[in-house]
Image (tube, rainbow, N blue to C red; front, side):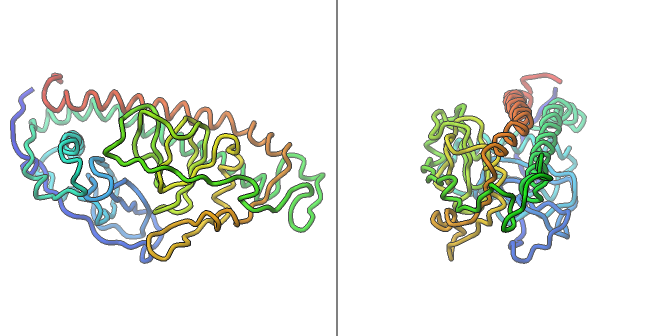
Length: 350
């Protein structure tokens, strides 16, 4: 393969994203892309596809490819000119370049597009770019297919939860009386009477050692570490930033200080699916935050222990398949990431 040395600015032109506060967004089909990926929806796009977006502040080093009209936020940079290069190749090139850049500039909290444009890279002719894309995209396409299957499994579990515990159409409901608006034997309790939210522990990005254990923040998994803070399964709840977000971790994990967690002794599938219905909301005036006492005071409708166990047994195969797909995706991502630099420096001929 014939590769040539050049600068990143010779391959693509980056531009800062555009402001779009949540209060002015109108729910619609258009993905809103920030430094951490798709973080919302809007009714009108700002940019036509294809889109290649990376973080300017916040999550730096991640690169996202979108094939539909989108809105890049001001925490991100996006490609405005591919200069005749394959857009997906540009995404892989940018990912490979920023991975190296991040390791050298770990103390810098943000990136400057003008600095990025001067970074030394290597590129190939369009036909060879497409060959590289065909190899790497095979992994990404499998990952995306699995991700969609995961979404469907989660939605199936949520639909079953709503059927049983919101609409009260659980097995045998025909023979159960409704008393004070809930089935007989059920209880209206405070969240704190059902489970206790524990504080996560700070783990700065520069002190993490990549490993087997997911690191959770209020926006979900933000990295990995070689040690765990919490034994899985655990429920993670957003405390700062993405207030009230709820995540299920089958494995041991490390929730950082932007999140709470519910330990394995209290965590189950029913509680994980029930928490989004309790009405967690921001209780801080400045940075969005969830006060623990407020969260514990929220009401939750608790079914009988027998029905709760039956529900957990019913949805367990869904979560088991979800975990299998997540593990498979992690392995696919690892193989792709091993191939990426070797393909990009011409070490592997295509």
